[in-house]
Length: 106
Image 1 (spheres, one colour):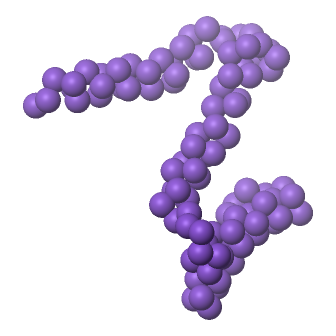
Image 2: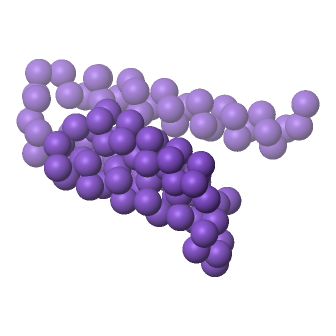
C-alpha cells in the first residue's frame, strides 16, 4: 500500500472524527448559538453543499449554451423554488425535474 495514501486517509479520518466528537465534547450544556464553535458548525453544512455542487458542475461547464442549458435552468429552478417555498426538498425535486425536462428537449 502507498504510504502517502495511508497518511492522507488517517488525517482525513482524524479530521472527520474531530468535527464530530469535539463539538459534543466542548458544547455540553452551553447551547449558545452565537458561540464561535456553534457558528462554525452551522456554516459547515452549507459549505459542504456548495463544494459538492461546484465539484459536480465543473465537468459540465462549457462555452456551448445548448450544452449547459439543463444545468443553468435546473440550478435556477432550485434557487427560485427555494426562495418561493423555503423548502429544500421541494426545491431539489423541482430542479431535478426541470433539469430532466430540459435535458430531454435539448
